[in-house]
Image 1 (tube, helix red, strand yellow):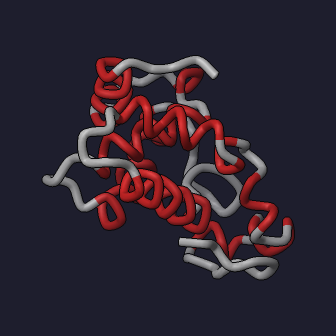
Image 2 (tube, one colour; image 1 turned 45 degrees about the vertical axis):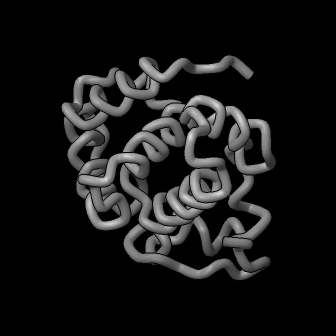
Length: 142
């Protein structure tokens, strides 16, 4: 996969935070790059702040946060858990772009990885969009 350099991760993170990132650039890879960038920032409580950040970004990008589109609590928290796990297993001096590459080259780099842990019905339910729903197929390893 294409490798991002540290400036790319920083730019993506800043553009996400200030809501200037074009919707077309808010890809699966960008989601994880921003998650890693925010998790590496000691001043951000990512699990507490990310939901509102995503909702605000969505609104700025013209995406409504409803029961069928926009912010999704279960996907967000599961993805943050993946990013945190990859960040915590990396050596302290590992560049974020290396951690991102490792994550994207793993099974979690596929956008359908969640369906190994959640049934489609449960994952895409209104309840899972609104609140954390534990996996119903296989526990997460982190």
